[in-house]
Length: 636
Image (cartoon, rainbow, N blue to C red; front, side, top):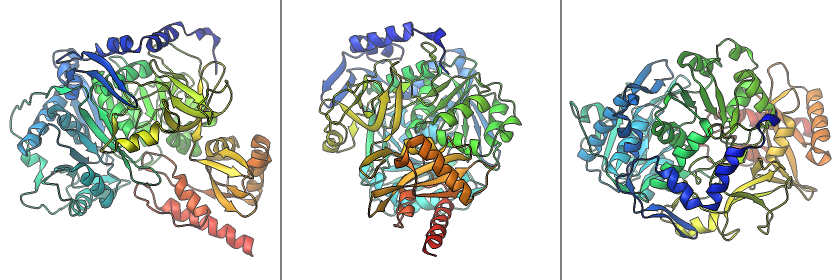
């Protein structure tokens, strides 16, 4: 998949060199693309490990996404094609979005929300979610979006930590044909929160809910009548735009704080460099807005760019495996940005559901959330993209704010390398180091670090500067520790090898779960896999593999033996799983990430713990049944 015609990458290399040699001059130039009420006097105030970007500047995120389009042709352009899971639709132009954001900003101010107050949003994937995000930004109120799959206790914990006074929720949302009663969950959470004063409720499903007088208001009743204009608040560039909690496998979730100026500059730049959209593009990022991908690449970056985008409420395979491809065909999607997990899920069911639809509108494909294995990459490229669409395989984190590693069609075309996250974006100074923090040679595995501040970086962890320092900067002083294994090849491309905390220690050897899973899916029968460890008295740990089969294959003892033999050839004897379990689907979050923690608990016969973010609890039950059946067979 490499193409020598593109070498050397002269324009990319020149831009990247300038960004490293003169970072302040480079980022000052990028910042000029935004509209500022007051210009900054200092590009970067770097007091390691804390960075303040564009100090002295004042701007507004809502203005960047809406107001500056109102005097251009973009005003009448479609901003969002929205489709609900039941099939209902809405189309909002940029002018429509501008009007609704102003009206919702008035609702917030009428209920006493002021600059600096944190507003919690607990909503399904409906237009009111980005509308309220922008309404909050308009009045200078940081928002915290809480994923609508979270439990009452998780919602309450986040509101309590931030002292939230107002929550926006809905009566319910749709998921796999069922109504999720969000208002009931929100009410339970509110009973645990002492600071909350008001709850705004969006009528989405029409189910009956209880409304508490003096606290709860229906959005449609609170909306002002007629044309409403709320002036955008000129906030400091360092003013918090949002706080988004990361839900780690252990410990207290971290409230990641992102400022306004640096985050917007980096988001706008990365979107332009990576996706290369134009006036005719129809862009679809399939991520739920409850995650950072949805914040940056469903809301702020595409709206700043004036792009038409698609927003879908439901599950990717509801009511069947053709739903996404119907949406691509219906709206003429040109840019599709999704997760490797979704690609592998579709891959497991073959090409037929895809082939029934015209996907010729697609021009670019994107991957986000975790590394994509080469087999899934090729299937995505050939089956979805018709072997004509470049794939941008992006690496970034909640903490980085936006993409750090990717191909850059918006700067210069580059050879495609299946499975690689590509090259660093301009200004992203990344390296692969050993345990002592020394950069390792090309081809050698190590730990991924970032060597200098960048505008999209987190401003800190809410109310916990010590945790911010110890989590990201203490392991390698002066370097941001990303927590991922990686290697860099001779061409400078980065290859992500999985989380450093997802390493299996087998007979003294350290094996990455991603390496094992990538080896498994090169077997023609295996569509998706999750490799975890189970304690062993002799080896310390042994590899256990849970695998989803391609539709054309059926589980059998012979197939287990064949997959083991394949992994022996691919990984060597140390990579052969002790047990292989065939399941119909793997436990995943609703954002599409495999919950290896849960699978490891099943394989070790432990309690699985919190399942708040799980998409389908039936997948855990299936894994348990497979595990017990094998154990009973061994005992017999």
